[in-house]
Length: 407
Image (cartoon, rainbow, N blue to C red):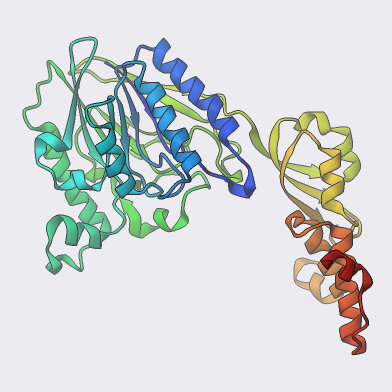
């Protein structure tokens, strides 16, 4: 048996207004080649296929085409619904795909189904039976209480206990009739496990303590495949469990992560081999720091990257954003952040009290310089200075340049 475990693609993400499709193209090509070269029996995706529950038409078409491309290899593809995915969309896509392609979209409705429909079973090239118990993301305990149990008396039961009960049920189904001579069991879920190291790009509300499940509640299985956390890692205290992580850095908190998939292989009744395979993430994400002169000297090092640029300055610089972008034309710049030197001999507690406060004009110029979407910095500063002057003087002198711009 050979299985490829991937997760958290977040198709359609555009943090900082950066289109990540070119980077997704590279990682998906890698995943496809790995599936072919390793002759995998199944591709398992543990949630967050899309970045939002209702993706744009372009994102939907792109995600659909990637799944079809993988399934066209003759390899079944199982995808769990994550917290970023829309379970109604998964239901609709599942209806369209039913009996057409070997793509299995697992949504919340499967939690109510009987055992034989909740546990997916696949034959492998080696003659084994691969059984997968799937737990898509569950938003909160009230959903479990109302939708699954229909029992309002469980109102005081915690999310961890509710999810633990569902995990127990899936574990019973997964292990029913287990034959160690032929069966390989996989438990797959989109959840936060206690002790996991977050990557930085996850939705903060869904990695808080209220949304954590405990390792001891995870069912008995030969491999435990989890999604939701973007940093690839072993699941806490479970040697045979892994978070696949996101296939490319989705935010700057993930800029130093090694992005990968896992190839899981082995035979029934024996410990499985888990291999981490590094992916080509396309453009890496990094923080660039230095003076304008330093940026000029090292600009070749920053080609084909996505960056935040921290510029060391002695005083505010007019049109800083434009200058930095001209210095680094081959870098995708998310933000330009000016940094000013500390005042020597004054500690942090005293600095604000003794340092001259910037004027309103200076503060607006700094704000405009790091927010290029507002418009050309020099023109905005001129407008602001003129309006501020008129407010202070109590005049309403016509501003010719603005009138011409409005015309």
